[in-house]
Length: 102
Image 1 (cartoon, one colour):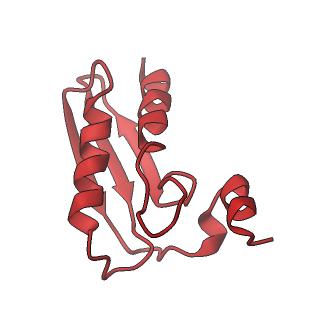
Image 2: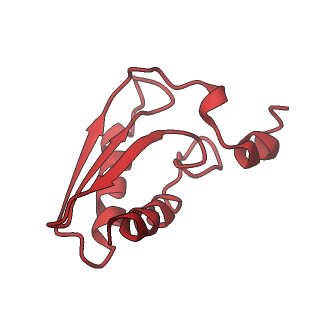
C-alpha cells in the first residue's frame, strides 16, 4: 500500500504550482520527502524557492489539501524547511529544460 499511495500523493502534488514559476512544486524540487504510515498519516517535508515567499501559507495549505484528496489518507502534516536551501540543481531535468537552464 505505502509505495503506491506515495506515488498517488506525488501525482497530486504535481498539481501545485509556484505562481511565479510555471512548473509544479515537485518538478521544481521543492518536495524533499513524502512518507505515509500504515494508519494513513502523511508527512511531507518541503521547502520554497525563497524563505520570504509571500504566499508560503497558501502553498502549504494547497499541498496539504492535495495530499488529503488521495483515498486512504487520514491526516497530512506538511513541514517547511530551508535546510538544505533550494537551488536550481534540485529541479527535474524536464523543469530545467522548460525554463532553459541547460
